Image (cartoon, rainbow, N blue to C red; front, side, top):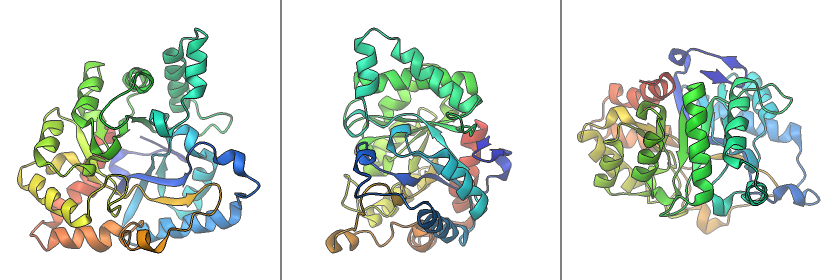
Length: 324
C-alpha cells in the first residue's frame, strides 16, 4: 500500500483512522486569501499536535480523505508524516456535486471532451506516478454521492474511479451524504467490476437503521462509522445512538466489515472558523482521540472484547488495503 512517504506493507499499518482531514475547506476558500492567509509553520505545528493526540492512543496510520478540490496538499502531508512519525495515505478524487467544484469538468464535458476518460487518467497518474510535480502518490480513491441520489456528475467519478481501481488495485473509500445511498454505491461499484473487498462505504453512521447497514454489508463491502463525535450536525445522530447501533451490528456478526474514524478536520483553510458555543457543546468527542476517549470505553462497558476492538481498528483497515 502507498503512503505519502512511500510504500509500506499493509501488515504494518497498525491502528488506523480511515477517514480524517489534515487540511480542508469548501471550494472558494482560495479566493479569500486576504482574510484567510496560510501560516505554514503554525498550521504544521497544530497538525503535528493533532496527530500526536491520536498516536498517544496507538494510532499508526491516518487516511487523509480530502478530495482534490477541497484543500488536498500532498507536500504538506509528506512533511507532516515525516515530522509526526505517522503513516498518512493521500486520496485522489473529487467531492460530491453540490459541495464540490463540478463546474470545471462540467464545462469541459459541455465542449465535448471525454471527461470520464480524463478523470480516469488523472486518478491513475496520481496513484502510479504522483500528484502534480510533487511525485507523491495517492494510495486510495475517494468518491462521493449526494443525499438520496448519485447524480450524473458523480457517476462520472464512480465509473472513472472503478476503472482506476481495477487498474491500480488501490481501495475505494466513499462519502455518503447523511448515510444515504450506501447499498446503491456498493451495487454500482460492484457492477463496474470492483471487488467488494476493496470498497469502504463511508459516513454510514448517518443512518441508525441496522437493517440498512446489513443490507449494505451483505454486498461484501466494508463500511465506516467515520463521523464519530459529530452529533446533530450534517444529519448525524448522537454518539449514544452510534454506540447502540454498533453494538447491534457486532452482535449480528458484521464486526469484520466495520471501521471507525472521526472525519475530523485538523485545520480549516480560509478564514478562521471559530465554532459557536452551542455547537461546541455537541462536539466534545469530535477530536483525533475521541474514539479512544468515549466510543471504545462505551463498547468495552458493553462487553465488546479487546479482540473485537482490534478488528475494528487494525484488522479491517489492513484487510481493506490488502483486498481481503
